[in-house]
Image (tube, rainbow, N blue to C red; front, side, top):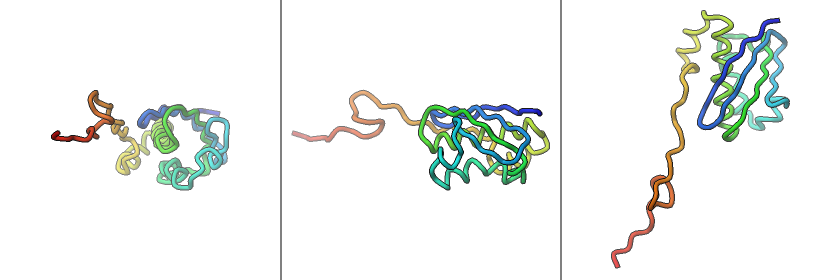
Length: 128
């Protein structure tokens, strides 16, 4: 049985993804996907690349993800699954690229600056 491994990242989350030919199991950190992600929208995000190429039921997905929150983790898993699918079959690349699944989302939290309570918020100004 052949495995296809890939890494996906989003915000501070990192997901190591392994897809294997199978029946459609989704295991994230040794827990069923539905139990781990808790929200249907996040499950849809994770499933998008597999549904786009029509291979939802033909691969088992095993994920080890850490860092960030559930939304960032779901984005990282999606990128990891997409990269693993491209490793499985290079012909899937144009379809996945057209949908934007191969693009690493560069948005990160802006750092807090000194002299301010947050990244952009300022302390209250008083003339006197």
